[in-house]
Length: 131
Image (cartoon, rainbow, N blue to C red; front, side, top):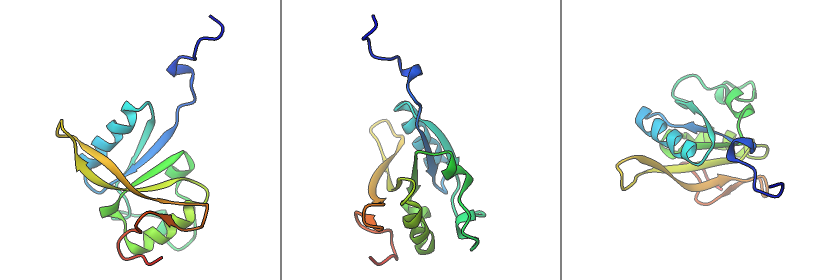
């Protein structure tokens, strides 16, 4: 069957970085994206040391490996949100709120994206960030 669809294992596997201070949220969100066939990387966010906030303008090594980054809005400070909107020009950055699904697991609810189209944010900006 030459025209048969390629097996999932043969497809390019996309990588999502999941960022949340809460380890349970982070783990459930990672499982959510893994169930969609994505590889996941996990980060506790800027409450530990964050290269995006150190003032040197360096790129996050996790971002370098990712196709998408999903930040728990509760972990995003105004300063980080501004830096992420700039990063969004080279990497899709999503802001999400946590919700608990029917099975009791945490799931991301995407509320906004950092966009390269207009250099801003699509959807309501993270708290404390003016458009």
